[in-house]
Amino acid sequence: AQSVTQPDIHITVSEGASLELRCNYSYGATPYLFWYVQSPGQGLQLLLKYFSGDTLVQGIKGFEAEFKRSQSSFNLRKPSVHWSDAAEYFCAVGGELTGGGNKLTFGTGTQLKVEL
Amino acid sequence: KAGVTQTPRYLIKTRGQQVTLSCSPISGHRSVSWYQQTPGQGLQFLFEYFSETQRNKGNFPGRFSGRQFSNSRSEMNVSTLELGDSALYLCASSTDSQETQYFGPGTRLLVL
Image 1 (cartoon, rainbow over the protein chains, first blue to last red):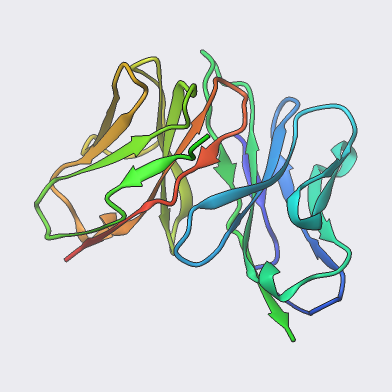
Image 2 (spheres, helix red, strand yellow):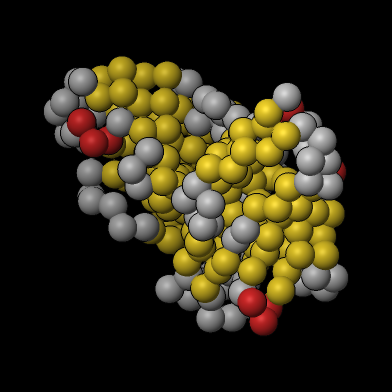
């Protein structure tokens, strides 16, 4: 069964500092990996995704993530955090299902706080 | 294109009642998935519909059901509501399998 681990429940960074959010996954085949962000009371917004190809993927709002198969990781990074980045971040894994179809398995999320 | 829309945005029900939530996918998207988000259990997959057929189902009791119409709009129904059903219910749409899912704003259900 597929699973996702986000080891950091809360992270606090200063505005302008760099950010790395960790994500480890367990999946039997080549995974499809996603990072979503959720602001309070809102739905999930897609930041970036990895399906195949270049292991360093660029997303919106200056975020990037690197897929490392050997470490089963897909960490999210941003070189300089803005106060508006404060939100909850979710890593998710999807992939081929018997009979086709879509199902995402999410990590427990990392709550990002930005200090001014 | 308009995004995924969900109605209603907020709902208050009492135990034992039933509720129906609606989701309109992005135009052209044929797959609709539903997720439940709670503080204790996080984001959990409920089910997915594609071309009016349930294609996948998560580990939820039979009180949770859904359907999809020919225009790809989807509804989910929860019967005999329990306090533990209080959650944010998120709908996501995609063009097909293994494609990116785009989420709606969610319906927040409170069961009293």
